[in-house]
Length: 305
Image 1 (tube, rainbow, N blue to C red):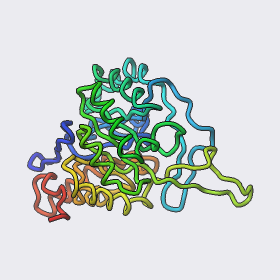
Image 2: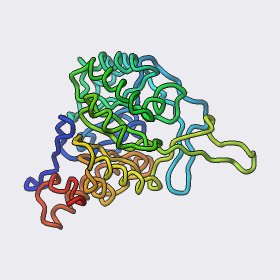
Image 3: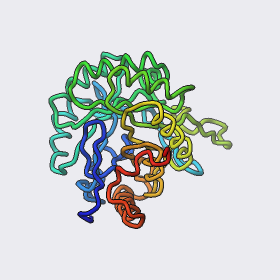
Image 4: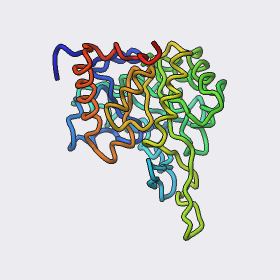
């Protein structure tokens, strides 16, 4: 890494050594990938969705490939916030990177209780998932309603001093309105986008493939939609954005940054190339050098100028 090039960003009060993090649900709790890359290279680590109590998730099959991405319906399988706070987060301290915990709940009070438990933990921030399309309660139920999304945001903000980043869904009519609503409720930042709702049918069994019938589409297929939404929300809010949706290369990441993202999260690409995040960090630095920039912050929202 060159010392004359600044890759560091401040996203919602979280200082990151570079603008690349992981997308929740695609990187486990990080330790699973420690054999493939040096986790300390990441700008931040966003870990798997965490709920108040442990969850087993949806019935299998839970993941299926599509021509340009994957459909998943995991259903927020996780060990519960107490295990995350008491066992997992302390272990992650060895990597010396900010750890952002993605949280979900069935009710606004659930979100608030999880946030309260994380408040005195090693977490550097909280990503509020009001956009998961694969659970019967919570998730998209809150994220598709600006009023409900704001209620969840206030419940979290009222229980923690950690930076609160709200993860938005593309499965809404007006994402700008939802973004403005959570901003007014006190959100410190936004993460966008979560997956697009989709499904696949096995023509031989004549049945849906996923055990949950519907799933969330991620990967390169969704990138143009995600870039467009980041662009639109950046113009209408003052909140920093973690952009995601089909980021597989440095070029993809730079596209999100120029659309207005302060940082980018890598998701589906981790399944193809476990070192995708590091490759993207190095590619961003090479782009800056080649094009005469000394600071990645110079490129945030560049396409709007």
